[in-house]
Structure formats: structure tokens, C-alpha cells
Amino acid sequence: MEQQFNSTYPDLRGHSAIVTGGISGIGAAISLELARCGAQVAMIDLKTEEEATGLLHNISKPGGKAMFIKADTSDFTAALNTVQKVNDQFGRIDILVNNAGINRDGVIWKMSEEQWDDVIRVNLKGYFNFTRAVAPIFREQRSGKIVNITSINGLRGKFGQANYSASKAGIIGLTKSVARELGKYNVNVNAIAPGMIETAMVKNAGETVRAAALDEMVLKSPGKPDDIAHLVVFLCSDLARHITGEVIRVDGGQYI
Image 1 (cartoon, rainbow, N blue to C red):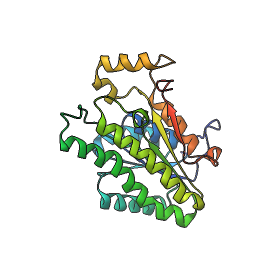
Image 2: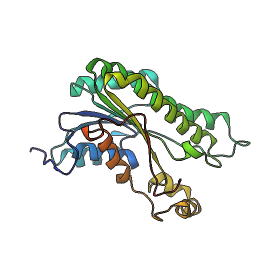
Image 3: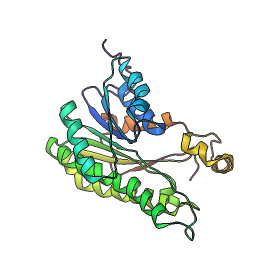
Image 4: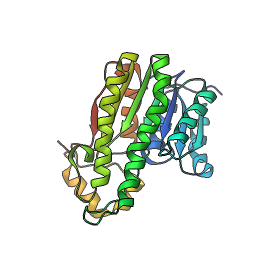
């Protein structure tokens, strides 16, 4: 069955994408939205094949093409092997969305070395690993789109999140540096900084955290994963061909 393409969406037919942390929350919304725009999508996650089945079905049912690879994004060699596998399977890679992340919150005087290292390893090193793996491909083909999911807390800091905020600030520096390095090869590199988005991570944080975030927001309503996914597909399309090195907040005015 041929996929029904929605002409109101950016046209990504003929493109192939990698989404890290692509099975749940914001990552799942991004994977689905890229597929709706016509892209082939490789979802990289530590979740199981069984957990990926539902999303794979939702993408393939209307005629989309997707694959799931279980891999640890913080493992440099695994990232290289994963990118090669996707390139072999799809025949090309055009888009990388770095999204996989964790949090291990705690005030700095109680934070363990393990809490610090785990967050930096996944949230920052994982982004480096996959960016490093696709960079030679993008240079050779002289095209590509990289979108890094950071956070408003990487711009402002957050009490009890020194590790998380540092990792997200590092992503912003990584984004700007790689945008400079790959720009002459026609590669766009941008970052999206969400505020509070309704995901399982936010729900697990508790009602007090949610209420405090809502109080900060100008729009007084929480974001949805689709709000991030819509911007991702725009940045990955020709509509955003002259945008690079940017950090775009999607936070309902939470941090102005």
C-alpha cells in the first residue's frame, strides 16, 4: 500500500532519518512525524523489540518505512556500527535527531559521581557519538540535517539538576561548533530547547514540579511531544535551508 502523503507537511520523501531515544515520549512523536512526512526512520533505543512494536506498526500501517535498533547511544563503537547498519539498510542517511536522554536529579552537595557521569555520558557523549558517526557521511554527500534536543535548563540552569543542565548546555555548545564545522558541506545543525513537555519523565517528577513549571509559563498550558516533533520536521526540510546554529525554545514562554 502506498503511503498517503499529506501535502500540508514538509516533504521528506526520499530521505532517511535516525532518531535516538526514538521509541517513547518526544522521540516517538518525532519518529512518527518524520514518517508522516515521508522519511524512512531508524529508531535507536535501549528499549526492547516488544516495546518498539506498537510504534513500528503505527508507522508501517499507512505505508511508512521504519526500523528499530537496540543500542546504547553512549557507546562510541555501538554508535558507529549503528549508523553503518542504517546506511546499509536504507542506502543513505539525511537526518540525525539526537534525543536520547536521562536525568538523575540531586542537589550538588549530595550528587554522586555516578549520577554526574551517567547523565553526561548519555545526554552529551551520546550526542557526540552519533554526530561523529554521521559527519563523514554528510560531508561526503554534501548535505544533511542534525537536530539536537536540549532544554531550557541548559540555557538557565535548574536547582537540583546541575548534571542535567550542564549536559544540556554542552549540547548547545556542540550544536554551534558542529554548525560551524559542517556548514560549508551544506549541513544544517540546530537545537530545540523544550520547556515542560507532557511525557512520562515529567509525570514521574510529581505535581509540585508540574505546577511550578506551569506557573512560569506565559501560555499557562503544558507542551505536547508533537509540539517538538513539528519543529523537528520543519528544521529537517528545505523550508529551513538557511537556518543553522540556532537554539529554538518551545516552552510556552516558560523562559523569556
